[in-house]
Image (cartoon, rainbow, N blue to C red; front, top):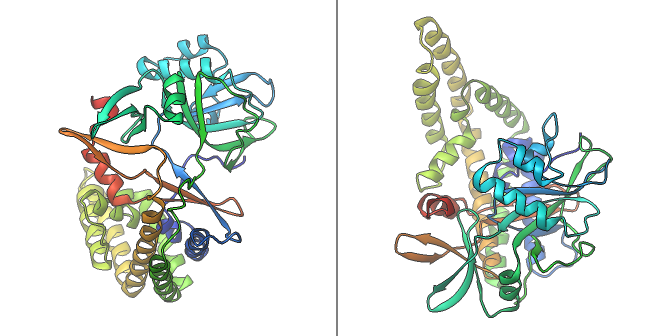
Length: 400
């Protein structure tokens, strides 16, 4: 079965996911992005914007029957689930209330377009657009998830959105002779979709309409120096140690997923500080294993077995402390380099992005970006600290 675009990984995590090749690939992604933002036409990397839409919509013509359909991610279940009529949507007990209404609108309006392939997109609005004044300016707004999007009422894009009954941003194309054989490729071609006044549709490609996203000479130098340090720390990571660490992490995932290095980093981000250390991870592992893994079984016999497994894993990782220090330094360097690029990308926004707070609206950056290399591999570039903060402090669409 071809790869399905169901989950993107953070750039800095690729060394844990893919080993030495993942670490090298992360460096190459950043170098390609630096070249792209210097204006190099030879850059090996393209960029798309990560929209904070919901739900994910799959739609197009069924490859075997040529019938139009809409679907959730359950399109890729062992028994694919998709909808070729409004009656099928209404008959599904897993689609109820607002979600059912979203899919009914998606079927009604997206069927007016001319699909030659199956596409995946993020639904941005249906009948839930509103008009708001933010800092004295009238905007048409929509909030599919955490981020509230706002576009000036008197702009061309504002007029298009105001007229539309549904808005969607497509980002992935699927091809194949059957649903089971579908293969994903990042990017979409909207040229042959046709036009319907009822549908506002866009692709996720990064568009610099102002010329402001190219990095300054100071930013380029800062990034080049940061990447030089990343390269040094990468050379300090032995493949043998990394392979061993990956196997340990796989074992932890099976026995106590919350004790992995990636979960440790996510815990720090939720706590408001991304400063992982080797000692910090070892302490996190011990604490989680004791409280959740050992504490999660009832009999003393099973508790003792879990303790022994945990002690063995801990001692193995403690013996790799130098490796952990180098890994932490490498991943931290990737995050620092990534942030330089994100800051430059965030200077350009054709649609305003805000979060709604208890006292009004606060301007925020987009959710993030997706970098795609010439081979079709992709990673996400997200300011994890900002997005986590927004996620925990914003008034969500479903909280209003």
